Length: 113
Length: 111
Image: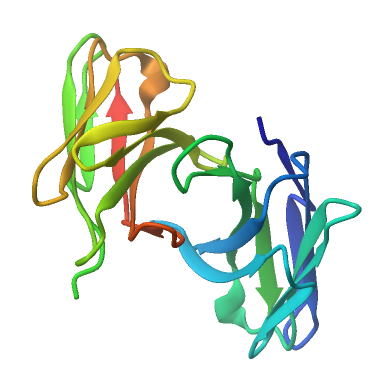
């Protein structure tokens, strides 16, 4: 089955700087990669996703890049703001029917004012 | 649209007891998945329901069971609770072929 690794586990940046979180996956057949943001006391919220037929996708200050050859994908947040502070999870599809995912262990991002 | 709603939000149970958690999916979503999230970890897939049947199951013992009703709402049942079952239980709903939207979760504490 799929295995997802995520780095770093914690990340502190100054407000206005950029943050990058990287994930690697093991199953070369995986074709869809979502990123979730989880704030304290809340469930994960889908913030951006990418399909394997594109290399990059942007949505305002957030972007995701995918390298299928190396089997890794990254989340990029530019011009970080204090409200970006949260735990971020990457995920990749698990095998079998359904739309279920294997999650990375998470990255705790702290944006310092 | 209320999104995905879960009840209760918090629950304390004694080891050996049984618990039932409930989930109402986002309007128009027919697929419900349940995840367990231990403190400081990513969610782990328990099982998924579609058309009132368990379609896929993760690596969880038979003590974990579920049900989906005709209105797409779902229940997660855990029997013979262990201390290690303490976690945030998340419900995610999706229309077929699209990514999942999560509820706020039920925080289960087993003492």
